[in-house]
Length: 393
Image (cartoon, rainbow, N blue to C red; front, side, top):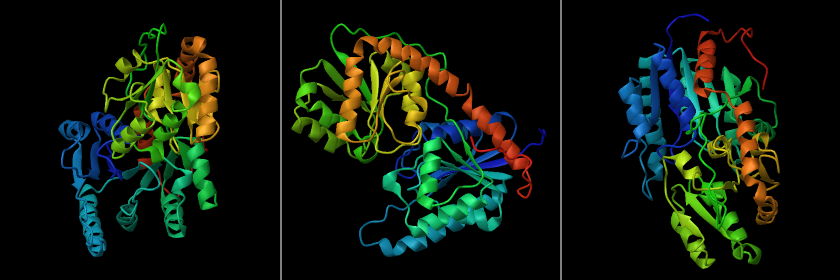
């Protein structure tokens, strides 16, 4: 590979929260490239309080552009096109100043606004696209589908975090997507993580980790299972970790089901390994996903996982071997998977050990470094040549 110093720009389309799991790959890759001597810039949504991760990126030397997103009040929707055009114009000016060899666009899900790709396309700047989450409920309408087909067709690569996500988007578009690859995300735990197994002498503790938005993460499904007669009599406690704009509704549901003594909310937590020193199993009843970091992190920490068969979950979890997979995101199927887990409870520690071995065989040691090297190859390649192209994973 050439030692030429490159200029790379990262664009995050995330607007629903200041930071999330989808931001780890591009941000850590940006730091790898910066340390290697390349010029790195990034464009993100502006928030009233800048997330610590963005502060760290700026302090490290990343040229950070923060896009203003106006929270339009009711009755002001008529101004939205003007604000969007102004935002695109400002973004286009920033992009022109950067003049990058390659732009990496990170999309948290296909539901996010990808209109920022238009200024990139108009300038002819080469770009790649990372799509972190696809879901049945996120089925694009015809206009959005045409945009995806154009954006994916023009990209030097479309990266997906799971085979399931790629296949579902191809079904939604009714076509095979060109130039696709599977990419792995970094995690928030050390690869050598080995928190001690908690005592099982009394209560079994399950952790449900994710933003508090049941339309995506399915926390209501778990609460409905726990509210059933069979589960009320079992020594189970569930800890919800995460924040979100549906927390009050979930807390009301807990009170309505009279689960206050068995279900607790702990907010956001930084110490993932410490969390797993106190919990036995991850339960993640998602309705849609990409490839959740919390599954990878739980398995790295030697914990079994109970997940729904959405996106890439079943690609890394083997039912009754490294975890338990519900065939669908429904109360019935989640209950079946949790019953299997309950029947195997004496083997949870051994299943967790198998999960730890399995995930280390799947995930690269340094996903950000792998992705950084891939971007450098794509930054150097001629889009009219295919010599560097790799087959879909």
